[in-house]
Structure formats: structure tokens, C-alpha cells
Image (tube, rainbow, N blue to C red):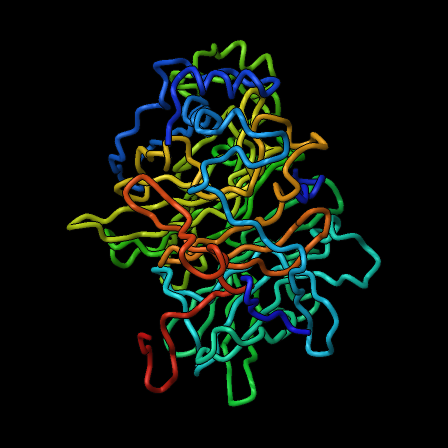
Length: 502
């Protein structure tokens, strides 16, 4: 069966890449988790102004250890082992274990994970001639490899259904690129933009695993979307332009660290700078693995010392969110800018970064979202698999972590015990690779629900975003769960009539 909307409405990354309680309550929560440091009574995260800087400035905001400590500080230390200790407003509702799967038109399962819609530079989501279209990383469950080995076989595929019925099943369209067309051996995440009439640009990560070291290259290919009454298909995508490779100056290379991250391009336009196109992506701070020494600016007022944190191995966690700018209108030439956010000595992965830019009063607010895992936190810190968010007044800002610590939406997790503890919440890895849509809808894929592996789209949830706070809207759908794979378009393009807002 194709995946259908339900009435009820981690897998580890590839080994080759590897309401505030009292201070006493916060200390108690931290003390029950081996290896963590209790937040100091006066410490409520680092101070952040949200002030904006030029995108071209040499300024990188810090997600500090003091910030990240506030995730545990808001966790309930008194839940029974294996329950959810996160604040309810920040917890994704539980996904039923009897979830449906996604299939091709012959009824065979297709493994699906990272998924994104067809958008413009402002994040509006498009249907084309009445068909809503999405793109996913996919793999073949029948090819002889396991679900956790799917990354080296990943291909970008597309799905569509009629925009007039957003509850309709997704129809599998197949691979976006022809076999052998992309320059790597696997295709990893990115974003897909629609331009005038039916021109499409897909930005993605071209991966090659052999020979070592693994290489990751941000790549773009252009095609055309086509549709008639029977469905959607694509033409073109014959040329693949390599846009960026890690430079070793700001963004770590495979030679510097075999477990480096460099992927997930998301392109967008900045309302404050008409005519310019920017890109955010996941990176790691450049330098030879293990040589970085944690700085006081990485810690904030966490109550630790840089030497002690470094000695505990936190200097191996060096995630950042990178920034690049296009040098031509065709978006075929780009150059790096300094990272806009670093998580040095805090976390090693800031995957699939994206901006949701909103007008608040007479000012633009820039919400920067990313996803991360429980197991990629540095020693002494805890957080769940889920969405992390920050807000500032520009694309380069002194970003303020949402909800004090940065957690915007997490899987049900007991932060009082290790993520590897057999008593841990059986839904701690229920969903991952979340994408935040402009209206606050959040889609993701199912990874593991009570031991049942997924590889299919999860129920969408709605996240209310107000100022520096987020909260799950449990009044919609079934206790907060909307349809499986509910990714609605808000704009239609139907040449020759052009764009039509829905």
C-alpha cells in the first residue's frame, strides 16, 4: 500500500562519517545522569543579544555548554526510569507502533528518510499544476543491506499527490537523477527550489566512500518539472555542478577528520538583502581531529574549566552551521563565509540546518533550526534526538537558543539515564530528520518505535513558535499527531498562469 493519512494520526549516522525548575531540582536532575555537570545556581545559559551582524562579518555565535545544560535543567528528575522527562510542551507525541509504510506503485516498500518539499527562496511550498511534490532520500529494502547500512546506497527520489486532497496517498515517482548521473556513489540531503515557470534546481550532497578518505561535495543540478492529469515527472538533471568542498580553514575536511560532516545545503533569500542568495549547511570546525582545545567562550558560565572539559574529550565534538553566498544569478558559483553558529565542545552534529524567516511587528526574525542526536553530545551534556532552534535579527546574529537551551522539539526521552540504558524510553528514536515548515508544521521520518524499524514518513506535528519559545500544539490532529507525511503546499504554479497563492 502507499502511505495514507491515519485517523490516529537512533539509527546511528553512518560510521564512515560519523518551565524552569528550581536550581535544586536542576542540580538533582544533572546529578542522576552519569557524566553530567549540574548547572550552577546562577547559570541560566549564556547571555545572547540576538543582535545582527553583516553576513560577511567574521563573527560566529556560540551554542555554549551553559546553554545546553538548560535542557537537562528543565528535565524532570523524578520520572520512573524509561518515561519521558522532557517538558510536555517540547515533546513530540508518541507515534503508534502500527504505523503504515511507503511503497512504490507495485506495492513494494521503499525506505524513506530525509525529506523536503519543493520550495522557493522564502520557504513557500509549491504544488505544480495541481500536484504537490516532495523529495526524499530512499533505499531499496530488498537489495541485501540493512536499514542502518542504507546511507551508502542513498538516492534522491520524488513523490507526488493531488494538492486538492492533502490526505491522498503519496505516489512514488522514482529516482530524481538517472543512474550514474551524480558525481558520487551516494546522494545525500539538500533542498529543491523552483524558479520561473518550471525550472528546478536541486542542491544536494554528493558522497563518495571509496577510496578513503570519504569525500562530500555540495552539488547542484538543474532540471524541469513536468505534469499532466496522470502525474509528475522530471527532465534534465544531466549536468551536476560541484559548488563547494570543505576548505580546511573554517570547515573540516576528511583529511583532518575521517568522521567529518559537510552536507545538507539549504538555499534561501534574505529579505534584508534583495538579489542575494545564501546557503546554510552542516559542517565541523576545521582542524586536525583531537587538537582543538575547548575555550571559555565554548563553555559560557557552565561552572566548568576549559582544561577539564578538553580532558574529558569534549574537544572531539565540533559541530558548526556554515554559510555561503552565491556569486552569480545562475547559482553555479559560490564562496564560503565564516560559520554562523558553532557548537564546539557541545555537540558534533548540526544536521539539515534551515531558516524560517518571519516578520514580527516591523522587524524580521530569523529562526535557525537544525537537528541533532542524543549520542552526538559532548561529555557531560544530555539532550534528545530532535529539533534544535535559535533566533536572531539577521542571518548572522548572536543567536539566542530557543527555550533557553536550544531544544525546540524532542522525542520522548528519559534524560536521567543514558540513551543506551535498556530501561530508556522505547520511543527515544521514534522520529528524526525533522523539517520545519513556514507555518510551524514539522515533518520527519520514523526510525524506531518500540523496536519496530521505520524508514517511512512520520505523522506531522505543529510547533507553535512565539518569541523565544516553542510548544507542541496538541489540539490538532489526534493528540497533536497530524497525517503521516502531511506536507501541504501553500502555493501553486501552473504555467502559463504563473504562481497562484493557495
